[in-house]
Image (cartoon, rainbow over all chains, first blue to last red; front, side):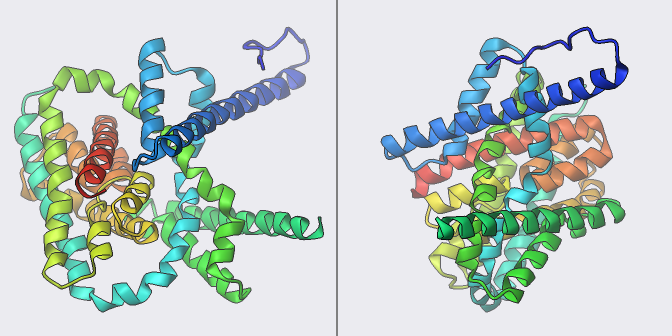
Length: 140
Length: 231
């Protein structure tokens, strides 16, 4: 499938506007299709080789190598990836509602969970912040 | 054919409801000036759980209907390669000065969390799940599954960790004498992942860039290392 990269010379400003909107949308859909393709390919390879490794991680690797080889991010990928990265939260919802099955488990260990989620996060943040400030001192 | 139609209609209905719940929560989040405690995932989850309860369907049934939404998490995670690619130049230029603190943060956060729950006689699946709490949700969910944890618990721990990191970030930076936006970004990204990054965006552009770099790098390294250790 080829999508024209320029809008044909049409005098009506309204039609031009609509056409450019459609063009952006089509490129975005193409970009998302590329991401889905890479993900499905990774899933297939990991399934075939029976690896215990997140397929999305392999997808990141494939896309990163591809981008390094062509040395730029193709426009359809930018247009497709921007909205799904920005609104990624919506894709977590189906998994997170599964939490209802684990409420008992969480209620059973309140102190442990507060320690590990609140206290240890603040401690790690403090140490990482201190170390990176020390290492990056004077860097631009 | 009729049954198939039913599933199709139900899928559209539940996916629309989930997206609608997200949009409402997103609106509330923006109204609250992007306060981390108002993270849209909290509102969306509450609305969806309440709706599932109200219509009296099984949660497993909801997850089947919303299959497409869950599937799209994979391709969305693949898209993380793009911000990582955009930050590659910085990574090459500063080298170990950024990689070291990201690795330290990425090791310390799960280690401290695991130590704190280890002594409470917690079940092993809870302990394994806690190990992924500082990496970005999509990688955390699949990594948790790979090492014998629970994906949905992982998502909850990750989100809560991110919220804690984003809320306490500014205070921690003052206490640790960290005035560099680059260093603040690294700390936020490697401990508080994407929620930390959304906090970093409000600090400065370079803070956000370093946070993004830290999220991608820490997520990838953790997702490779943990299955090798515990898979």
